[in-house]
Length: 366
Length: 88
Image (cartoon, rainbow over all chains, first blue to last red; front, top):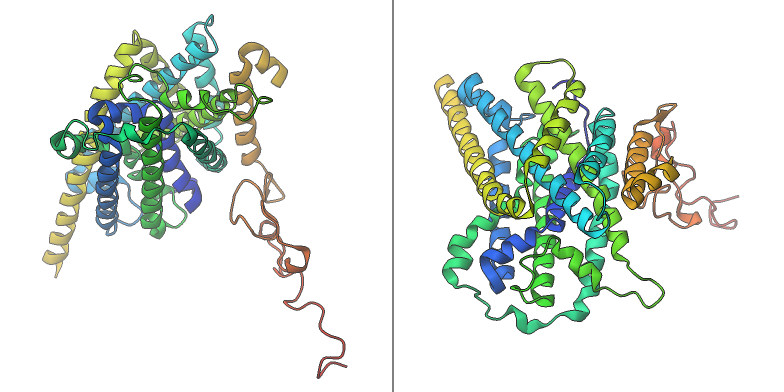
């Protein structure tokens, strides 16, 4: 990892924010609203506070391990077996999440614009540029990702502000939705919305200044929470929650009701254009990350040749899903619990036990 | 190229073209200076040569991506009063 390309503070923040906003576009608020109904805004606030506290905890636990990611730490804790297991789990997780994102977005595009085109064609169009771009290196991807994230954030803010005309405040009632139990106890599972933490675990070796990790982690989590909260509030206030649970892209529905006067018609195409850029950026970064994890466990010299294989895996997996119903089931249940178990439980336990081992080692040395 | 991309995939093709071109351009360097500077490696939004430029009388620094020996292009007070005490 010594010859790894380094990225700056803003670029790192933009990567984490971009992951969350891409998920928001691909129906993440809808998954939250299905679970918690009209109390989703309260649930998102609650989950965001937990996520920020979790972020502080992670920063504290990463502190003694300078310039190490979760794989180095798992090697320190459990040797090569644990390192190999965690790496494989994260590779599977990233391939799974990328395949769901690319398939979901391609299916949505097929419904909106490419009714007569085969899905394979749209999927290939997403994955060929990823192969081209991933060979250039992570630094260039991160630079472009920064500018795309800024445009994406502004576009999402425009959507949220312009739809405020259609707000019906009465739709947040009943405030506690399906009850206190669903909102605060079982609703804690909505923390899967912060799956971008998985990227934080691997970010430290890429940073120019690893001391800035705490700033990066906290500011990206806060920005992600704000966007998640705003999007959920908008969706609840604009649509009655039951009516749009079957929709593919709930944020796209918001764009359809925006009007910029009579001259500009169908401005939703502009938002789709920006979302295509963000999806490409997400795929390019994730593919590169998978390559780097693979490089760590196999000790191959150049991970760039692996990009073809990884992209093929993502492409094949994206084609396996038979229909949208299966895709939604995978997104709302399988990916949700996979994220919670891997990102929020296993990784946290590894960090805690590694810190305890380090402390014991220092104690024994003294 | 964009006409071809637009022909095969419409808006999606053009977006792909924009993304690939941006990434390729941002990977280039010309005499050690990033090709898209000062716009793509965003170091500061309101430095003297970036997205938001200060008024002409306030631009005292040279562009940081040029790595000049003297970072200042002019003194803090470039034009002093002619008849100020001590000036001849």
